[in-house]
Amino acid sequence: MSVSKNYHIITFGCQANISDSERIANILEELGYRPSPVLERVDVLVINTCSVRQVAEDKVLGRAPKLQILKNKNANLKIILTGCMLHHNLSRLKNILPPVDIFLPIKDLWRLPGLLGGNLKINPQEYLSFSSKYQSNFSAFVPISYGCNNFCTYCIVPFSRGREYSRPKAEIIREIKKLVSKNYKEIWLLGQNVNSYGLEEKTIWNNKTRKNFIPKIQRGRCSFEELLEEIDKIKGDFWLRFTSPHPKDFSEKTINTLSHLKRFVHYINLPVQSGDDEILKKMNRPYTVAHYKELIKKLRKSIPDIAISTDVIVGFPGENKKQFLNTAKLFREVKYDMAFISKYSPRPQTAAAISFKDNIFWEEKDRRFEVLNEILKKTAKLRNKKFENEKTKVLFSEYKNGFLLGKNEQYKTVKVLMDKKDAQKFIGNFAEVKIKKGREWGLEGEIIHG
Image (cartoon, rainbow, N blue to C red; front, side):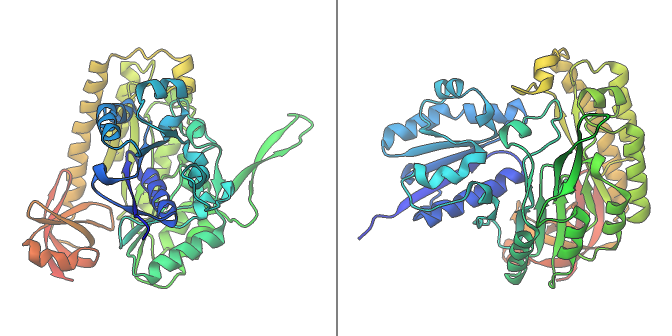
């Protein structure tokens, strides 16, 4: 009788990392491994890392002593480190994390079966085509592209994941149809620059410039707008979301398409990163604040009930008081529903780390974070108050601390006070909720139909 092999995956970071871990899980199960929550009993432990901010790396490095204890108890344990941290100097990581057996860059995950002695073959160009072991049975992440061509000066993604590659349209549609047939209620399209889906840079010779890079649609792909329209035709009761778009690729055509889609629910995360044109230029973000604000204006005109969040970095090298105040001004003008505020930390190999001195004291970064967060609290509460005494459709996902929790179409957290026994039937399903209270970070209400 064969002895079962067990695995466990620890995931740090964003939705893209979660999606990668789901595919890693499926690869391991194809190789005969089974999931286990008990680390002392696993044969393979995968740590999928994030390196977007230093704090994310510190969480991984801080586990070194615990990993060594696991290794001492089980000499046959294979510990695999993958994810964004693998863009670092490998000798440095090996010194800091001696218990790790295999350092596997995320773009080389096709090599995983061979490294574990398995016969499963994966084409290096077809990793995204490999099935996922979805963590949820009602909400799924579907990557439509991988990597990035933008080279923002603060970002390590082009180094850790490589150049942008878009999945064939037919594969994406097939995966979503399969999910919808299994009664999935929410589909997230993922891409580092999701709205440049289908494009690749073709070098076109020009006698004046000597060369010119012109985006061309790849074979088997289409424009982002056409992909959205194809997904919208799929029959079923499901919501469509996506993250994250880039302002430079967010056109009027994109907005017009979104305004008439049936499946798209009205929430967009549109990263701005800074509210100052000079800092945007240093970040290699090829748009101006005026252009960004015009996009927001057009979005709200075409989709009046849309909720908008953003990503922003405070304390970027050289950001002076006036430049930061421009970001604060943008926050007051746009009145975001939510914002993901980060304090700049230099990422190895990036242009910002090489060319700019990280000259903003951490205490000042903390202060600037708090200034933006206080503005956000006010604008978020103001926008959430508009839901009071209104009905909203909610997809419930969990029960925690006496409350049934979920997200509505605008991706706002909705809490409903309920007994645990009564809450179970709502998890993974839609229900209509009447909102009683709009607070800073969410809504509270009661179910009126579900």
